[in-house]
Amino acid sequence: MTNENLQLVYTLLCDDVRIEMGNKISLMGVFQNIMVERLPVSLIKFAVVNHWRGAGNHHTEVRILAPDKNNLVVTSQPTHLELAPGGFTDNVSFFVNVVFPNPGTYWVQTLADTVVMEEFPLIVTDANNTNTIQPLEEISETVN
Image (cartoon, rainbow, N blue to C red):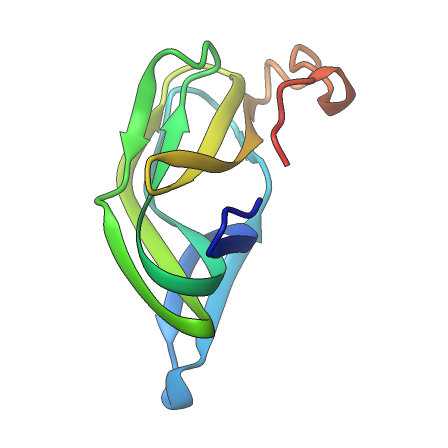
């Protein structure tokens, strides 16, 4: 999504991110869904990587909402972005010891200047619930 001076180009979920020589980032364990043997599950660490393009000063944050979209599971610390005109940057939000108590479709939101720029589903399931998760085709509230 784009606002006047800022565009969120992509968002990735992964187990870890490392900064390499030359300011390159290495992503380990990129994933779309969480499938575990048993719930609840506590993820020791994971990251949300956002790639931004634009200009100006902005504040961003990442939130993960419960399947009901009313309860917050976790939120990142607000991050300040300062972009020169035509600039780009990667912002990494790390989360530690996040508990997903139940199976369901959780929601990953990326905000910039308090506006939701992107929201996408994160399906969390265990071996006993692989057939009870709502198919993505039926989820109509995704904002792109």
